[in-house]
Length: 113
Image 1 (cartoon, rainbow, N blue to C red):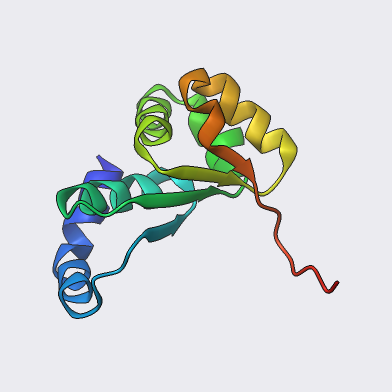
Image 2: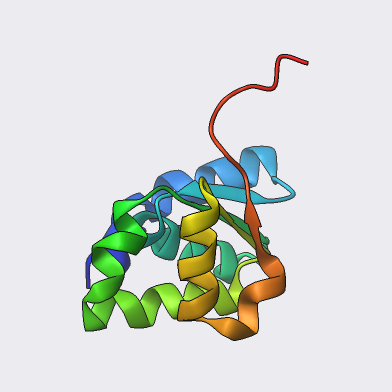
């Protein structure tokens, strides 16, 4: 219930931001509960979601049945899911093979060239 509670807790602020800015996409970091909560709200407003996996959200939380099921649903519904390493991307593709084409490597940092 963490993601649903998070979505409920930020709903008014989210809806105010949507009304004022009407973004083209929602960018959420850390898959559970943050990105799952963002996906709940984004879906209610018909706004695509891009989510980023950071590490323990995949390596630790996805080992637990409840978060794993919600992360798998997020992988099926998000426009893209970024992993900060190829290893995380491989784990995400194994977790939800149907989403493999939308899982992309996006490392932290800045390309100075």
